[in-house]
Structure formats: structure tokens, C-alpha cells
Length: 329
Image: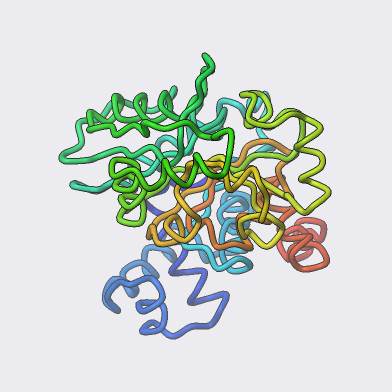
């Protein structure tokens, strides 16, 4: 079982000090804490056995794997849902883990941006009720006209309801019928003002979609399967807040994106904490694209996906996977 989220900074301090060989002042700078705090965390790491590799390897497998992913992709924090427990239901486990982390990341007075889709709605659905002070939840992209259970407005308002926060819906469609209409709508004062709010968010909750017939933007009617496959041939790799991105995590230059009403990627990258949640096994390439585009700082994923990320990033297997195959280490 993974260590508590509240104790992760202890594990991170120990990882940087013992594995990377950083000095205590360097660890303090890296984690934005005092040197005295680093000394305290290292002492706690020794007392709890985190740095005792011979006794804690199995206990902290997922946490060590999380630190490897952080190192490989320059992420602030990674949380991993283990997949080796009996009867694990990823569809329940990952949203529940993400919901708790998400609430912990919110501070008083924060503005929170929310995307949409199955994963985001599943997180909203299991989120505990809280009474946060002066928090505003902002919808990151336009809405869908069809009755759709994971619509952007529903994701936003359900999270706002769970947090007892103010919710701001986007009073515009996700996709317009022409580029001209989209340009004109973006110039409307109310839409322009809402788009401008995104860069000022403190935290964003995102997932990433696939480029296939199961994509949200296909199921909601914004694109046909044939149109989606044609865009995949042109380089579309994933979907973020209703927009198509390429393998580098940049916006795909296409008619569809020019007709979309959504926060631009630069505004989303300006959000200090960008929490991305991935639970499906078929989202490796979309996730890689989001990471390449620096659209994520905080990541929640399964252990299996974490290992696949490391294997593809390093051209081989992660060091942790190699150690697990060698019991003498």
C-alpha cells in the first residue's frame, strides 16, 4: 500500500538525498522548504524505514516508482494506484485516489479550472463534500448541447457542489459550425473575460482523451469517426479540454481546433498546478503527448502505466522493474 499523500514529502526528501546524492540545502531548494525541515524529514525517513532498502522495498514500491516518473518527466508530484492487489477496480481506485489528492491541493481563495470527460466526472462523483472558503471552480471549455452525463458544465458544477464553492460555467458551445463564428464568439466580452480567467487559475483538473471512435468529441457529435481518423493521420495524438494535440503536446493546426471554444494551451500551462489523471490502459500515447507539452505538473496514474511510461522514455525498462526481477538486489 502506498504511503499517505501527506507523508510523500518525506519520501521525496529521502529520494533526493540518498538516491540523487543532493546536499541538504539542495534538497531544500528543490522542494521549496527550509534546510531544518529537510533534516527533520530525513530523520523521519530513517526512523520509519523508508531508507532501509532491505526492509522497505515492497512497502514503498509504488512510491519509488512515482519518484522515478517524477525524475524522468520533470513533474512536481506523481501518485500511483497499485495494480497488484486482489480485485482492484481501476475505475473506482484511480478516481477515489485522485479525488482525495485534488481536494488536498486546493487552498483557501483558489480558482480551480476543470475539464471534462469520464475520468473527471468519475472523480467528481466520488469526491468528499468539503466546505472550502472563497474557492471558485471554472469550466475550461465550451459546453455540449446533447444530454451527455460527462458534459463540461456537469463536471464543473458537481465539483463546485462537492466543495461548496462558486461554479462558473462556460456559456458557449464546445464546437462551432465555422471558424468565423468561433472567432466572433471568442470576441464577445463575456466569453473573452471567461477565457482570460483561466491563466489566473491556481489549480486545474484534467484528463487526456484518445483519438478513436471512443473519444468524447466523437461521442458528443463534434467529430465523426471518419473525421477523427483523418485527423489522427495528420498527427492528432490526444485530446485536452476538447482540443486536439499532437505528439509534442502542441495544438494541432486543423479546422476543428479553430472552431473550438476552449482555454488555449498557453493559458493552461500558466496554471501552477496542473493535475492530470489517467486510468485507461489505451491512453499511453495521449499521456506522452500531454507530458511532452508540459500540460501536467501533478500526475495520478496506475502502476502499469507508470512502468510503460518509463520503458518508452528510457528505451528500456525502469531501474525499479529491473531490481524487482533480481531478488539479490
